[in-house]
Image (cartoon, rainbow, N blue to C red; front, top):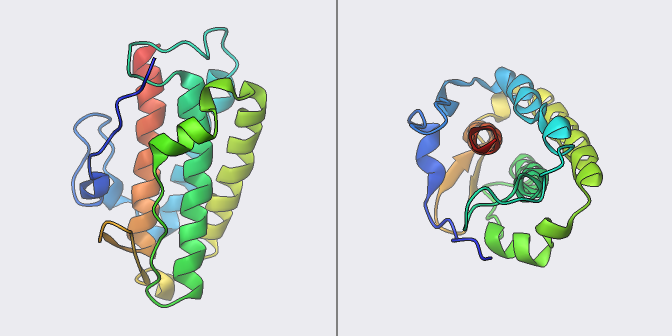
Length: 174
């Protein structure tokens, strides 16, 4: 069973409330990001401990395990981008194809307990890093490979939406 690639440009979520999950990422201030990141990832240990963790709810839709592995990797990718922005002037971000990452990383075959532990570890790292960002660094910029420009703040808001949205994706299916 294959997954239909998501080719939408989701950067609009830093300007508008998401009509699907209802999250308003653009309303989160820099100092609020650590708590949102932590809260948005708090349910994954339980989600990944279910008997049907590998079952896809519909053709073309990731299983909870695949979503969990994606969330684990989102946390890592966003942390790397945050550090690039803090340490360099207007860096470019390497392209990250989430669908290729799912295939190459064998998300469907991952150990659910290991993925849950990695989410906990990675969310703590990203939340701690955002907690340490000085206010005067919030406007530092970086450029995604498709031309989308982020600030430290909007990257965090974008990441927060991704985390909230994927928790919603899994909860609406189960």
